[in-house]
Length: 428
Image: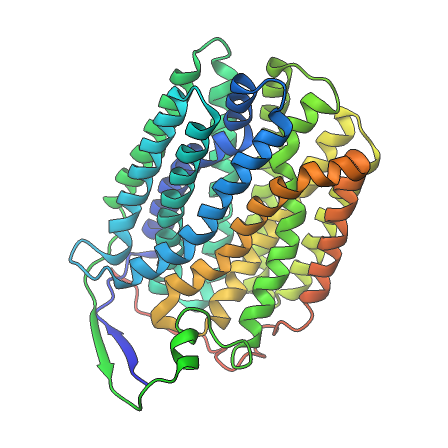
């Protein structure tokens, strides 16, 4: 089997790299997550005021499928885009550029199919950008600092969401297109600016020829052999199940309107408030989780704890249908997600099967983030039809419990065969 070796990887100083990733990623998330959290729901309500509950589920579900395939495909393409501009920088530019163009089309849409197509394109290309940003961590960061940068990267999504919410709350009377235009500008401007901060370049790829590859070896290039790399598969399963629970947040706007009877204006203000408070919660545990896991060389206790906190939030959603309780539950969900995201990412960098395919394998891991965003909206109308909002949240709570059980086989720091703290020279 042919093996690849990468030489000449450009390194960005840690502080500069961290700032560049966070700034560009957060701005990109303004473009992606503001529609996912709010604008997409209101756009569907505008076009289909009577059937928005199921229509939104269809649009979000199909769109999230393209996020699912976009991350691993984008990662694989990024791994193989070996040009002087940079493997990662190329898609940090092109991904958000095409994604924001799709957002502008959604802003002018008058039919559901137009919204769906635009959202599919946006999800696909924004995930190209996400895969490129994520791959910079194994590319350029020493192993003993990956938990820290992962924790800081975990802040980018809630910061992006919070910024988007503040903007939407500050312009309640703006036209629909104006709102979509503003988030599109931010969604591409941030990544472009980050290109001037992050260093990247062409690498030398050395291929050593071995025996002819079998079908199984070829398939393992798409998805690593679960028997050879079981830790990687367990990490995907645990993250997928936990994110199934957290993806209930996609229905927060619908829930406030449908369950509590909020108007669009009230829902906008409420969602904005929840996201701003949730930002503080995510920031606290994302940073602390990453730093403390690095300090104590332990990761699984943080993963168990954060999953349990998310479970408590879901149970509150299920049984206490008033805004105060929902606000508390949202904060708990943020606390749990922040810690889980940062520590889980640091764990994954230890167990990647093939370092030369880091972006592709990270893309597969990110499927665990994207797939629940497709499945939850697709099954939500069915779950709501069976037992209403209580059953909807209880069902997702059970999946989170299963996700906690799937954490057990994962190796703790020092237990994996590749657990050595590689010393990579930092650029001066």
